[in-house]
Amino acid sequence: GAVVSQHPSRVICKSGTSVKIECRSLDFQATTMFWYRQFPKQSLMLMATSNEGSKATYEQGVEKDKFLINHASLTLSTLTVTSAHPEDSSFYICSAQRSGSSYEQYFGPGTRLTVT
Amino acid sequence: DAKTTQPTSMDCAEGRAANLPCNHSTISGNEYVYWYRQIHSQGPQYIIHGLKNNETNEMASLIITEDRKSSTLILPHATLRDTAVYYCIVLWNRDDKIIFGKGTRLHILP
Image 1 (cartoon, rainbow over the protein chains, first blue to last red):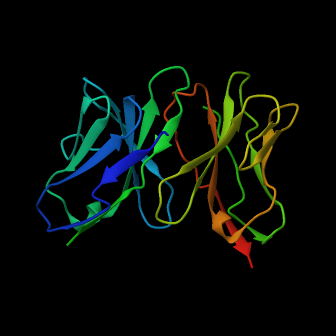
Image 2: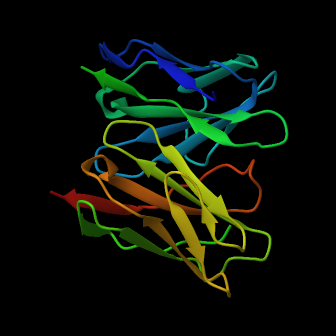
């Protein structure tokens, strides 16, 4: 149990286009999901906290108009990178917090975004 | 949240116990110690967590010093698949957002 999936696993897009990444909790409900970004040989950097039915909370320095987050259901959160540029190329990882008593966080496998 | 300090990298021979240290000298009484690891190009994987007592599960053991200012993650019989970056994290609540430090890059040597 406690599986989190991400789709797509890899995506290549042209500069100036937008790309959507999905994060799903497959066998549990997640009131809260988190989005991270990771550049090569660096640690994960928290981008935002996504709460079901409400606006996401962005970390300092993360552009909310560029990284659109929607958490429309208890099992799905999406991250849309708008007007992508090569510097947005990165590994994007989500985590889902199981609703209920345990509040454990489970991480997705990540999405590799390459902007050409 | 309390900060953690970990060695940048460590080597361990396959089959031996890997002991990964973590310093968290500013930890408060209600903060948990969590360990995650990230294998290359994958999402982080939860390993173990503890508050005051030592903990053991099927993956590892966690030894927390009596003053709680440091801890050690022990992988009892390391395999090549344990090669990863290991993150020691201190959390006030289990539903805290996780802020990752640089972690320890563990190399298991054949």
